[in-house]
Length: 359
Image (cartoon, rainbow, N blue to C red):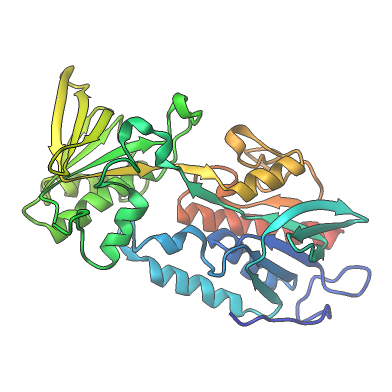
């Protein structure tokens, strides 16, 4: 990635402080929120240092091939985001893990493990989420039995157009389980992760496109099709692809002697117990705050429920914190879809521009 530097000098349409230099912002996290905010800030003349802990930009978008509800190619979204980083005034640094974040002398300071120091007038946390560790739900057999995988792992299979079991066979019967790590008091996550329901529908359709004669089952507590075109895709999955939806949670999943997966559940609509054997079980893992989100939020006393970062107010101050100059964007606050994340990043950039100009 090219690094754009202006050596602290004001450029065209810059937001200039009393020192005569363009205002500066450090953004921690180069996923959709961080990249979009960086682009918006640069367009408003703010110098941006964008720090990403991984060598690759894009955050969790890099784990997806197609995006719901219209099966947009995720690589196109990434390319569109990356093109925004060509804006003048954005300095991109990858492989930088921020371990300390604090205010000092009217500036915000971010330090990494080697104690490199990044100083700016304001800082934006765009540190995102990480998928829930399905191994914490031992009763579901992830990491114990073959052919029990996560939705992230299933997505990687669709990238190559091949959905295969551990022994290299095409699964003739497959099941998806929603709410793994979400809406679950046992693991301490009582919230909905927002994207799992529609993603299960998307992946069920992708399976049927690759295996037209296969049988697919989606287990759910209740389906939350709250986005535009979500309900239409849900209906299409049943009418055009014969996806079977079963209202009920899986109580136990275990491997069989022939390397299949036996599921024990209950059909809560009929009240009857249910036992089914499938070739593959896909666990739709929810969102949890990333380790960096937890660490930096805790350091600055803005840690909210479940470890997400806490905004000053959820209505009129959703991108601000109670610390002057510290802002939030995206899924470091709570689960969001990609369009919601990008819109939130734009809102955060607007708040930051107003702040640095006032400062």
